[in-house]
Image (cartoon, rainbow, N blue to C red; front, side, top):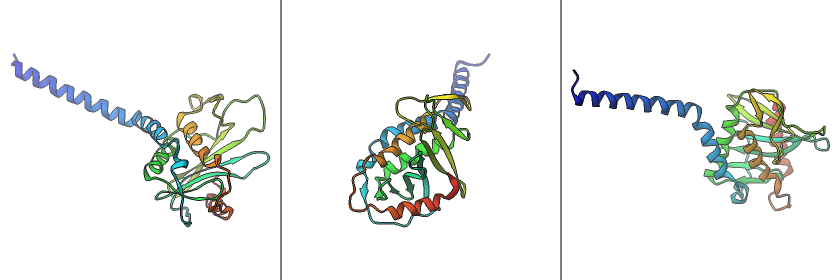
Length: 209
């Protein structure tokens, strides 16, 4: 019959094994979404904290992600693009320098979008037609791919139909578009605006939209 110490040791080993399995499972499935949620919370207000910095040369290699939009009156709209190590171009063509923590948090949310099932377009329900479409451009190895979102808004997330098992627009997409919208909210002209810089970014994005 095993001694009390042997039984105790066996229970301890089993407990450690159970915790290890649980941790691996959590890291694999839950942690990315939790991290993205925490990143969204910490990144909120990033545009106000960013500074209009020196001009820089955006490149495809340094691109982290971008958001564009299309409407009937503006079929080639631009919202924001982020470039390593901590630069961005906003909707007015301003070259921004982000706080590193904000930049990393934004990239974390975009990474959660990239981890979602791929589909042609996420379509939020609307009883009207010709609603805006947002395009989230993500790095896909050395290439780019875009995630289309029809009728994104802050009021409703219900999809027209179940998409990849989702009936509501997934949190990472809702959150990245909300964060990106900060780059378009300040439409005041100020020193540093450069429409030419927006054209440069659009050239980098090319046909990814």
